[in-house]
Length: 116
Image 1 (tube, one colour):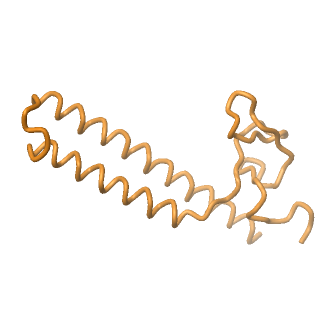
Image 2 (cartoon, one colour; image 1 turned 45 degrees about the vertical axis):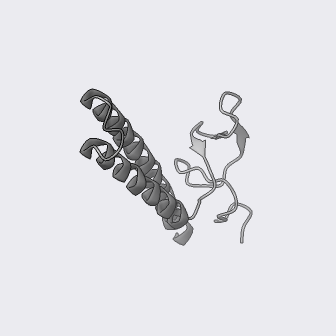
């Protein structure tokens, strides 16, 4: 394998489609930035375990939202508060599902590059 060949243990830039030199972003200490194009890079992470955990969490949160709306939980609160909790849960669910989707996209793009 060449020095710049596909390696899922090394951070990978989806814009440059290569293992480029990178640095740690001083503003966001957990984000690596590509030295060539300035985009965010990360190691390709297997999407299946993350997906299972997130889908389980989203199912639990939506069950909680359904319980709040149906009055099984906190029947003494007003309807506006119940809707607020439900909308907050849906926003969190959408955010988590978007994170999983982005991870799958990065994984697929890395594997397409790896097969070239």
